[in-house]
Image (cartoon, rainbow, N blue to C red; front, top):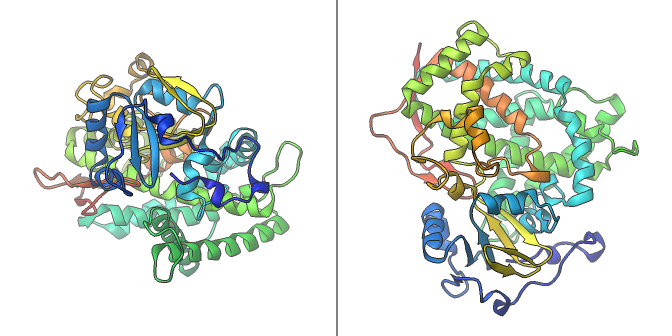
Length: 462
């Protein structure tokens, strides 16, 4: 795997930076395989990541060496591995150097690409956007936007994934940036779509007519847009939308975040939020369509809370939607929106009986752990009762990590719960979600799961 060294000047690198990669000999004691020349196991992984991981675990165990995407990574598989890497008691795993080779050209200096003290300071400053008062504002915006879209969708067949993706983008433009649906929001949304697609493009240089060129052009547009908007909102006193909260956020010393850092955080947040919520909303809708009894339980719960068809789910009522939250958690278990999480070891460590040298790229695999029969009974079955308080307490704390864990736990996880609950409140009290008998779409697993056919559903008006 390439390091970030090629993309960051030495003066910009934090003190904990490592330039050295372990040699093949340094990792030869760890079981695994190199795959084909040059490409390694890249194409085998992309074809079916779940089956690939299962096969490697069966063959080599829960610590194995794999060559893909241009370098060697040591996979650490299991709930204990998740805890070691994500909780990171010893502060030896760099998120910045794990995600950097994938994201740094398009989403540099986002919160996930920061470590330790710098990450902690900026996370604290940005957390203002998720305090109760701004969250109440987002609730109103989400209820209005989702209610209007339910009417537009109407009854009948639809491809859910592209529809919810557009809705999520529009809601982000409204709640996150504070701009109404329209031409300006469409330009912002398209720039984000181009950047996300470029982040996993095989051609990593912005050559003409490539996804990377469209992605870097999108980034340039948004940097200019957010820079001007940050300055304007500071001058005018901000607002209740998330961007205005970021623009006026301060660190502990009372200093405003630098404008370029506000811009980078906003770019990253929009990327992190819209694709993951799109994926998780799609998986939830799919499993509710396949499990009509559970769909009806959620419908009854949400009707009882809101008082009837299509009514708003208020901020104070969010906590009452317990079954809806449990069903969402189960969908996140079955298809986590971030299938694997990369890090880079800054120091030598031991795990599973193996010594793993400093500088080694490592990764944990939520998808495998979430479907591990050693942890979950009948993991292929959709069963929200796995997420009663009692069941959660009885399980390893890091057996379920769709939002990551430790210091890098997703800052917007409560916003995600809120958006999904409001979506379900409007959708399930207006419509019954149906799929044809035996329907089981293929899912593209990487980089963020989505059904290859767009998820063919039918909305039946109640």
